Image 1 (cartoon, rainbow, N blue to C red):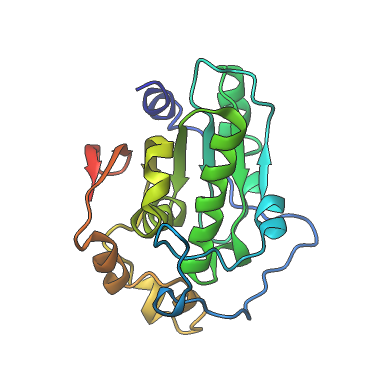
Image 2 (cartoon, rainbow, N blue to C red):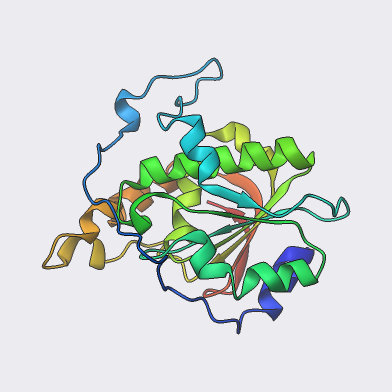
Length: 220
């Protein structure tokens, strides 16, 4: 698995968490819930986020390396896609002959993860449409956990994924989400109940590698 090997070898790269100049997070947004979501013809939730917004959140290099899966880089909390990866994985992967996209989900990861997952679903669909190939995902922190929500509730995107490299993901939940004094992180939806909901009744046949746990197999 080439992308898993490359990301393991590049694991010492610094994942910056600095922000975009002049950008401030919008902490007030409507919370979307799958319980009330409309379903499409495939029985999957209709994406509530406008397509133009989803397209604007995805930034890609040219797709000119048909011998490799294009890579989707997914940032962690408090940052954005280009800010986290512009000096690390983006140039390093390009030097190694990969087509690369970054996606920035809302509010620097402080919003509803159910909404953020829509950005991953759309990115996978768009990248597959443009490249004609399966997509390899690399996610850090919340970016390692939240895409699993996308894979669970939008099963049609699972065949579009070749590999999923997860770096330091909170796969057992985090106390920061529910116990912080300011209450800011509670909107991220990271308590154990959300993780349990992702695990329930699901085996996603996607090759994955957990950098922190050094485990690999079918994500459950």
